[in-house]
Length: 193
Image (cartoon, rainbow, N blue to C red):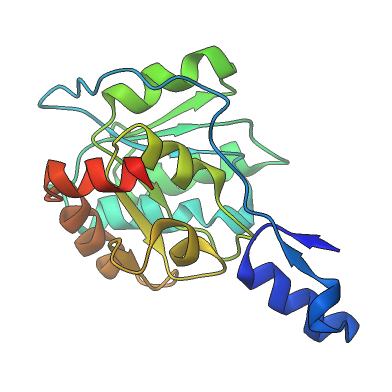
């Protein structure tokens, strides 16, 4: 059995009572695109890449924007599942941040390098992730990341990446600010990993 992260590997071993030598770790990669040089504007938005669905916990990002008006605008890039688009729009309206939340919709793989080159930071507030390819994509492109401490995200991003509890909008806002202050040298080191 092949697992993409130690988190998934441990889950498989526990759930199916598999011997250690039967579950092998093979990480995902982010070599499917060529990053562009970073060129975020002063008003560059925060970015989330991936489906819009409840486990991605995107309502937490909307709540973080409402809790901290100094955060940049937010672009949610990805296809919506079910009524998630409507639910997120309703929450943004209810919290008064509808002008700061932009649903980009599905994006083509060719758009990925530009999305990463122009954003302020990538934010992944998921409640559950078996790996988190967008984190690896962002690191490859030299983009600061703020992640929840759920699933394999810290394993992928590194324990030093700004992180937060996936139920705490204020902690999310603080981690985003920390990500935005990440020195370029650290981003360059993450890119080389």
